[in-house]
Image 1 (cartoon, rainbow, N blue to C red):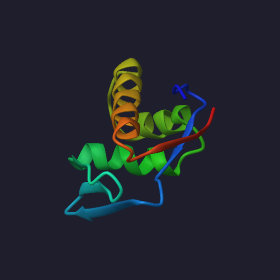
Image 2 (cartoon, rainbow, N blue to C red):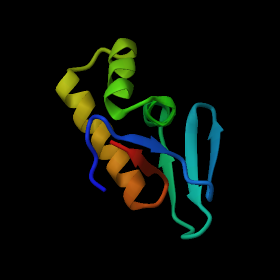
Image 3 (spheres, helix red, strand yellow):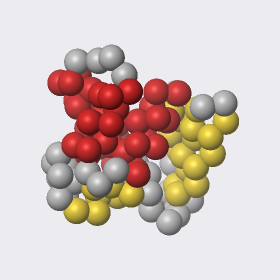
Image 4 (cartoon, rainbow, N blue to C red):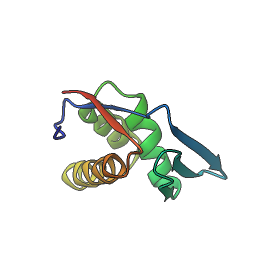
Length: 94
């Protein structure tokens, strides 16, 4: 399934997340793939996984960070796509 602004993502049940000092490590127990996120990436992940859509996550992040909307949208889609490809997120709709 391809991502769209209306897509909603969630964390699969076989993924563990550990956040220490604002940085996260995500581990897929099935594939043993892991991914490290810095503080900004961790905040993007947190908002992305708790929002109704990628577009609403983008709006929330734009309210929090001073960044060009196009750049943030591209970075958010890129992060989501990489996490999906590694089994660390799944698309739920959109």
